[in-house]
Image 1 (cartoon, one colour):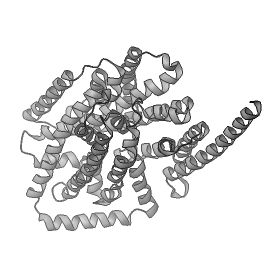
Image 2 (cartoon, helix red, strand yellow; image 1 turned 135 degrees about the vertical axis):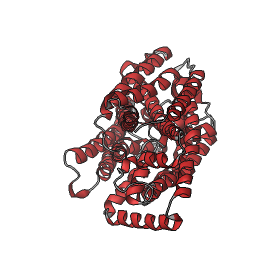
Image 3 (spheres, one colour; image 1 turned 180 degrees about the horizontal axis):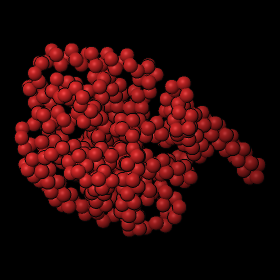
Image 4 (cartoon, helix red, strand yellow; image 1 turned 135 degrees about the horizontal axis):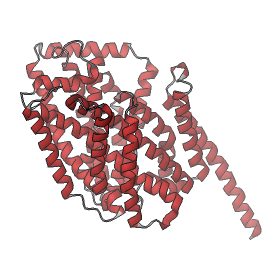
Length: 472
């Protein structure tokens, strides 16, 4: 991929401006500022940061690829994602914002199930964030490799470690501020590319609609009902209150700001996914038939944008990668500090020590993710793997902990271990026998384990209370 002079100027100008902006908002003096922005984030910034976070490579390059190969199939299945965002807005995010002294999901888990469960929540959260960062680093590295010709290893490292610098210096405040800049940029550039594609398409709107129907029908025919159900459930549950989103709820300045920000982000998702899926559809007739599906998003931009402006789209794509990576890295390092290091060294960890540990953790986690990115699968497949671990491993006890009046420690840690382990074993060792998706197996196993742990724990509490009464 060769770039013109003005393309290169456009890319560098964008990132110089972003770098200056990040520098201006970088100042962070406490761990509370680093982790939850001192809980002063307004609704508009919650919305922009949420949207910029979930619109990663999967919800841009990945969905354009799926639109090219299967029309609106994945768009229709993924509408469960904005549905879950709306549900979170009205049911869970406001509830989570009541935990004003918590910094992570693990902090909430500790309140409901104890410190060992908090440690497990930290392990799952950090592992999940490394997986997300690796998937994003892969597409960012592929892009930089195609543009510069640098080795893929170097390209992945440059993208991921550059992103880590934003988080290292300013924490969630810098992340949310730069997210807003990235969000504004790609919200302008990407719809403009689609508009040009419609205007310049040689076959017209009727032909585009007919092709969309053919591709979508073929996609439905080529996939079993259980596969489609698994994808829909994965988008419904796989990112529900994952660490970056939970951090936005905890950082919101009020319950109303949290609710409004999440709801608007869900509405935006419906429109955004339609835009990128349509880019994949209109690519038929604009691009050669042998175009690789994963390259469609950029190839359409290359064909549509006037000379010298293609760099604007490249900047938008890199912004998409970086905005997601920033949020995930920040959440990972906060979970590492609070839920893993904090449970090992106890509450004696001072604020200054926690801030230093978070900054060091940012670089360490980014380095691990950069190595893992070299082995990451395709974008959507990588996201679905992460979803299949998150929902069974941590989501169930977390949501139940928000609403149940009485919980037991055993229910929490037994559900987390059983749910995540079952899902991992089902898809890696057993290779999903019978075509049953791992997320279903993990959710069922985690639910049973939670019920068993709750019954045993409740029974122990009754026996302990009776013994105390007898002694008394």
